[in-house]
Length: 404
Image (tube, rainbow, N blue to C red; front, side, top):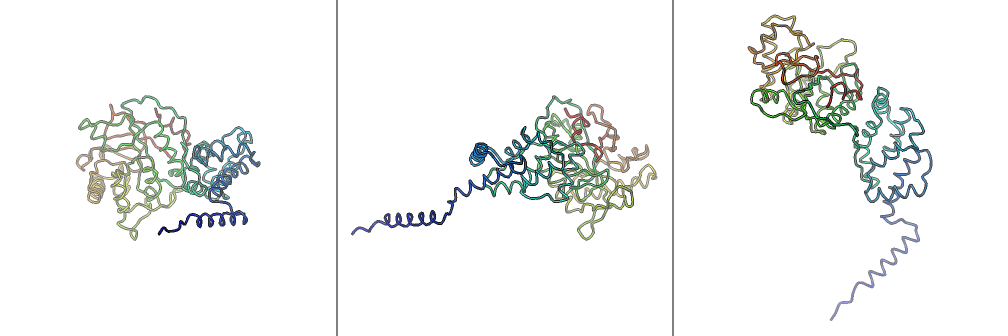
């Protein structure tokens, strides 16, 4: 005996449910997704172009966004660098406000707004700022909710790549990295990311001081375009702000630690006491050893900035050796890696201090300034660096460093 087929019953149920949906005016799921894409695209027309979208233009963009042929980032770039928008001649404050309203679908927060406007006012490109928005987690989330592929923009699109001088080695000298910097010696997170993206676009690869020794001592090959990014003192913001950005771009950097100000845990975390009361220098927290150990495991290099940030040119030989040896011991015992370089605090050094390097267990020392190094003439006891601070416009980084 055969069972009666369920197909007619299912067909009747489907027909009844469909009729009910249509009678109630409920939009099917696929249409709702399309509507979200339309809403996403319309927001750019209304907030950036200051008009309602024309049917042909909107339909074309919605079709491409829905089919994932165009990303949200590409769409944003097309609208915000279109002749129609450019002709409006929006100033920097208006431009940033439009980015918040179109890309984030909200009014700007004060801190974020001021940070981006300040970057533009000091000469940063709108391409870089737009990329900062499109490449953010917030925009990625907005796109996902709309059913749009987010994509990313290159903040330095169009930069040339030239043949590098094989022996040229820029060693950048920096200090802290803060979302909203204070004082001369801090870079904004946005400026630091611009530096990293610029280096990457030119084809540079970061190396460490130990890589230089391997090259000089053993002939180990270096990248075609090597560069060292170094950070003095050891602020916590390196772990919070600089480290994630370095990982994002596949870079590493070297930190010169004042080991006498490095705590073992949160309860013993210190501040930059060596700069206390100096005008224009904010109070900042220093790193602690667990943060340093985590970065070291990820390839970040740690070398000495002495034990107490002393002016070694004012010290006798016994005191110089003490601060050098203690700093070296602290780093090597905590990290299990060699510490054989020191960056002189205050860029202050004496012939006596240099003469004590080898006896204190060091292979070399770095200055804060001096320019770009050359591997064919490098003096390990007087390694030159190129200082980058908040007075330098990010758009001038490539010419200032002499990127090739």
